[in-house]
Image 1 (cartoon, rainbow, N blue to C red):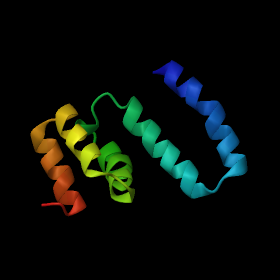
Image 2 (tube, rainbow, N blue to C red):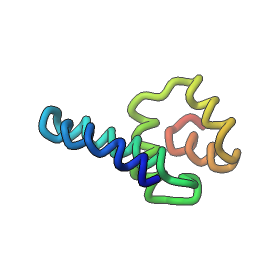
Image 3 (cartoon, one colour):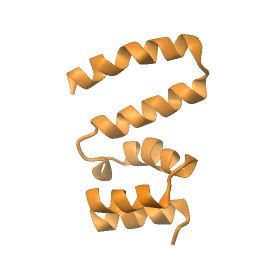
Image 4 (cartoon, rainbow, N blue to C red):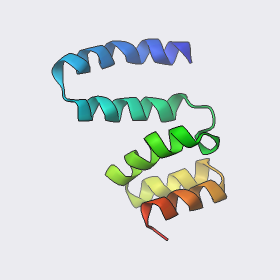
Length: 85
């Protein structure tokens, strides 16, 4: 995990200088989902990172891939949050 944070930190620092807050927020959300060992068990990651990313732009193919990776009940809650069910 430390390697992931160190690897991501330099691009994040440059983004702070060159892009807006929206792009930085998106990057932080992606990083949170990637480094969290169990997003389905962590409400803050799910509600603060994954759901906003999913609402922003997620294709049906990506949603199907989520179903392959995460527990069915968790994906069901995500779909309800996105208004898919």
